[in-house]
Image (cartoon, rainbow, N blue to C red; front, side, top):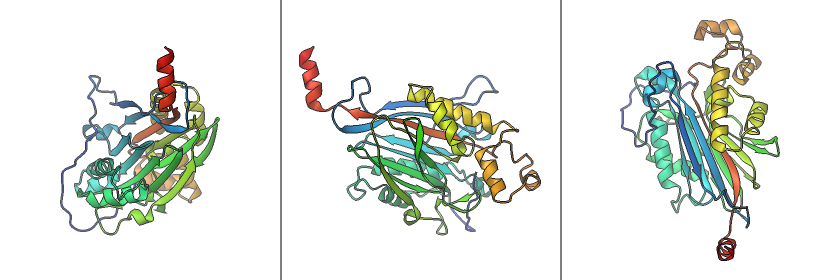
Amino acid sequence: MAIPVFWDSFSLSHPLFHLSVRNLSNGNSIPRKNKWLCLASSQLSPVGSEVSFCVGTHLIPHPNKIERGGEDAFFVSKYNGGVIAVADGVSGWAEQNVDPSLFPQELMANASCLVGDEEVNDDPKILLRKAHAATSSTGSATVIVAMLERNGLLKIANVGDCGLRVVRGGQMIFSTPTQEHYFDCPYQLSSEMVGQTYLDAMVSSMELMEGDTIVMGSDGLFDNVFDNEIVSTIARYDSVAEAAKALANLARTHAMDSEFESPYALEARSKGIDVPFWKKILGMKLAGMIFFPVHLLLYISLDAMPDLNSLIDRWKAR
């Protein structure tokens, strides 16, 4: 949910990347997309100094957006230590008869093709620049990209309110800041010249350790789930796929609870936006569900990558 910036005229183009969502027989059910990808050998005892991601993902589109699979897109790449990214399409484009899912889908498809580009040189900010320049679909999206080097250095570039959290030893030790023009109008990469560019990206980096957990998602997750809930939820699961599913379901549960005081609601009140205003604009309680929530997250556990000599020694010892 965000406010887009429009020009008077624009043209449509076709996406290069789709998130397919399976239709369920139960009309009351919300389709989910589940994915598991292990980029490191988590079955072996960690040895050596190189690290990479073990990834689980889960997506729950808003019920009104099931046909197109929601407006979030993401990709996971095995390049180097791993590359992960999330883009959240700005839903306001639908008012201009533009499918908000096309821009983020094409943006992520382009980024996934460019991760190994020589000019990118393991720089997430340059990856954003090249992917944005290659995207021709009309629309806009908030976006975050994280690139992991084998030595454990995580480099992050984000535009808008997609987010990333790092949990270590049961504590939240890092979170990306939100970029907004004003409340609920985040920075966004756009097909229009009035949007932001890669130059506006917030860049950060940190040294990761074996066993660190990274949670990445769109505002649909972080608007509905507090950081302490993220920490306590992932602590209950050994499987990253199950933890990702649990976090997404928790975000949906909170979003549908009209009595829940969400992070989004508390921030709105801190900005002086009170309930009567939102009843008039959205027709619902400020304490209630986020308008058109979409949840996508990547839950990542960091594994040590066994070195080749250790693997050979183990094989000989069998």
